[in-house]
Image (cartoon, rainbow, N blue to C red):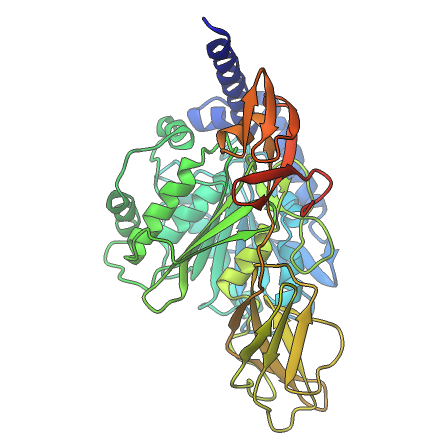
Length: 510
């Protein structure tokens, strides 16, 4: 065997070993029927920890267990987070943890409580029982548990009904999201109950009804099922026969270096839900986001996003988070909470949670327009509202700036070049009551947005951003030496011009 061929063989073996290690860690053996006793003990400990912290608070809200929510055929536990002073008519988000996790883990790590406080909605966090799965995986692969009216799927919907009763949640604005096995169950729930869920987000998960048995689960995780988009769509349509719409809006989050739930699952989810919507697979828009993320959007017939695919370059298996205090930062990095980009923030924006259905007080300003852009600023103008003492401008659902805007123009500064931003504006009366927000406008700053990619040298080469020679890796364009060509050495590369990459380990842009 020549040297290059031997090197490729060694790399392939390393990839296989890493794949098997990650798969074992996340609980694939449980899906196939293996259930180590130690894993059951660890899951029971996690459950006890979640119960012990059931009265924890965050920013004045309350996190607690709700015991009585129905017949509970899936043998699940129900936890909720409710912001202080939450009014009736607020949205509801259901958040499903991944394998080896608890409701408490997802409460502390995912970032959803932060946006529940900011955007005013309640969160339901279901938790599976060790009696269901010793590795604490939701049963996305079991047709007796993940179909309409049955098992875990029915238990989750009972939780939704109970939350609507307890908190007066808006039944038109109920959403579901989940990680890994929780992502698989999320897709199943969207197919089973399109009359309950207005939208969903599948994070490192599987297409709806990909597997009907434990034996089939591993095949879904590890490779393509070779189905057409129509065949994937039929799995959704047959989950609730006779339902004709409207269909849930679906966000899909997938890491390109996920060896537990392979990236093809993200593609198959895209194929499935664009077919259900009848909108084809030609992207409406494609743009770059932080963390080496590419967002591809597929609009419905009215020009509104129906399906969004977030591909995170170099990310492995987990939920994308970005710890910090910024409006688009969230979560706590750790096992299966990967420091890349705050997926919860972008999912909340996609669902429209940052924009209330209606406002109190003054009406929404009309005529919001973009009057100018530079590489780092956007200028806006709008028509005055009678009785307004000031205005608040929102960028991506979060207030832009800190001071009161007393006129009908505003310039937002400190932005990133070549990046789209969405804006709304609301009038504020003399008592400080904020009125309804305007329709959104989008502005794109001039210049070119930095594109950065963080992953190991092997995958940088595989993606065409670098090349290898003599066992070493070199950035394309700049030729900078990135070290050994393997899976262990990781760098961030910035594309400063088409096909030209520089090392940006200290921060992007370099």
